[in-house]
Amino acid sequence: MSRQTALGVTQQHQRLAVLLRESVRRRLLHPGANTHQIIDVYIATIKVLRILDPKDVLLETVAGPVRLYLQGRKDTVRCIVASLTDETSGDLYEELRRQDARPLDRDDASDEDDGGPVAPNWEPASRDADPTKGSRGGGDILSMLVSIYGSKELFVTEYRLMLADKLVGNLSYDTDKEVQNLELLKLRFGETSMRHCEIMVRDVEESKRVNANVQDRLAQRQTGEAQKEDARCLDAVMVSQHFWPHLLGEDMRLHPRMQDRLAAFGKAYSVIKNPRLLVWKKQLGMVELNLEFNGVERSFSVSPLHATLIMHFEGKAETWRLSDLAREVELPPSVVQKRMMLWVNQGVVSESNPGPVYRLVKDQTQNRSGGEGMESMVLEDNTEAAVSADANDAESDKIIVQFLTGMLTNFSKLPLDRIHNNLKMFMSGGDNKYDKSLPELQQLLWRLCSDGKLEQADGEYRLVK
Image (cartoon, helix red, strand yellow):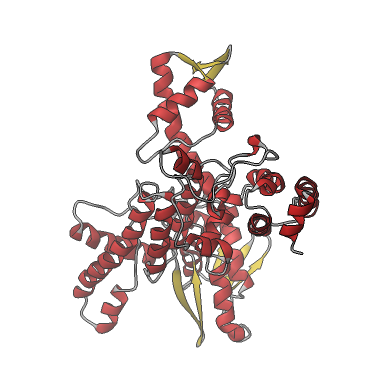
């Protein structure tokens, strides 16, 4: 006898649901379980319980604690979005590619309320179902995961951040995989929601064409073949600032040789794309270096900051104090010391105290056997992240504060719920859609009060005069 048949005979649905819920809570919902593991178990739970109980009564009881726990984890959205576009993730990757998938804006209830025909296999809700636990038959797996937060905007924002990181690090400018994922996501999340992402992919495709034109223009000014080849060594990703998330990167002073390359590239670009100008994010990107020590050559792929630091050891300046090197690149000594650890660990420079003082190691015969494995480690551990969710949230808060300032200038003072409703109305469309919950808005208002920009009295907020 199958479990489904046994349940039909014994009618022990409620007891089974309680036992499963407690088992899941005890064995899965704890800090030792990583978020990917919890999501995988949640997906498996949906599949199994829908076989045992197609009405989803069991699922509502068992999955409730899992949904609440996932909602409290900071990396849940990122894990879900990463699994949707990762070929090795399994269930969610295949879920995005379902032929019968429906847009997330549509739910099962809409079919019953739009006057259309009722499905032949429709059944009323069980009397054991809890009406406070959401709609019965909560859609496919992806829609149930999105419903944990009640809004698809969080997932679209997270995908935009992940896409920006991938595109900035895409040295080949091959966007076929991103285009395929984007088209599938548009079917589920809607074309309007993915408009920014679509423009980001187009920027990379356009960058490939612009790079070829700029490099040809630079090469035409050279006479020798070596000089022409050298003129083609710099590639750039040109991004539309208003459609990309906030890109990280402190301003710094590059090595003069690198700065000259950027200046020549930018000048040629301004001629081709007049009147546009390039504003460089100097800490982002990748530099391929070939370092030669007394006939021993070693290759590295590192960030522009790492390349700038080691290039200062070229020539006569083979010894640098930390303070002098930090002054040269116009960055705090703590940042420079952290980045110099790469070259110390690779045996390219030595570090001595006090100071510290860094000296170039000319004898590289012992490090010669590092080979490709060493290069891969450098590439993996020392690339700079292009975007940050915290930085992106900070940019979003700045825009909200601008709207809020104008609102309180006109209305003098407003309660929390009125501010929340006005922001949803005024920021409902365009590039900066308001997506904060009421508690999140309250936290922002409290921060503004602490900073002395707002004051609260009798439950209402107003500008500090």
